[in-house]
Length: 233
Image 1 (tube, rainbow, N blue to C red):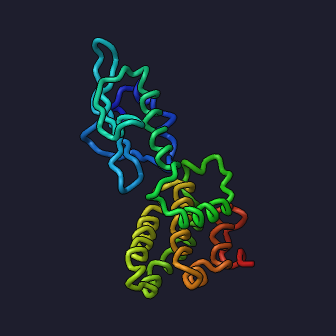
Image 2 (image 1 turned 60 degrees about the vertical axis):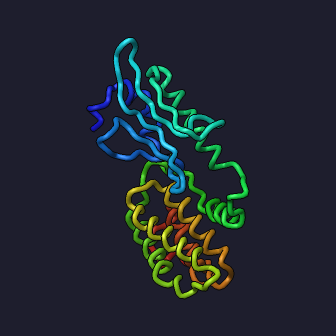
Image 3 (image 1 turned 90 degrees about the vertical axis):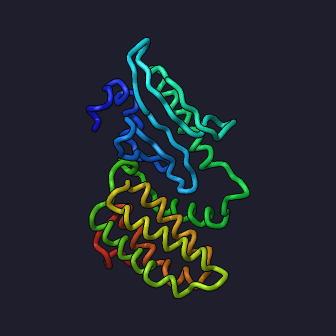
């Protein structure tokens, strides 16, 4: 597929193409040259390179949403390839600002728990945004997630039904991507799942997030050791 794209475009976007982002991903497809989409499932933000031309200057047809920080509409225009990186970085910056800004739509409780868990992992690997977890780590984490998926429904009530269903869906998505996404993506997603479980109260924390199981997962991901039960305090 990459040989259908002019080399200059690939060179311009290489810093982004080889980086596993927590806010956008590349979608393989045949309709366009390259298609990036935001990872927020509730958003249709995208950056698409539809076509290219050599005259009067080497340019690409860019279809992006949002248009800018002032408008969420689609912007479709020809961009000189020398300005492509700047155009793409502008789109990435807007996604990052959306990700970081506080609003009335955010769940501050879940976010606080998730941030607390995420900082405990101490991910310092230079390749954390590119490479996946080790196979042993994936299997260990999948076993933990399987326990959540198979047992959390029994704690469902009329009040928390939507939240429990959301946790199950998040767990399923995470399990499906354990071998497909980077370490950083997996751990960030896991931290959100733990944050949502924690919001449900001490009973679910004790059931699914005991210090022993958390320690096991965290120490494995931090590469201190990879021997299952030997990691338990």
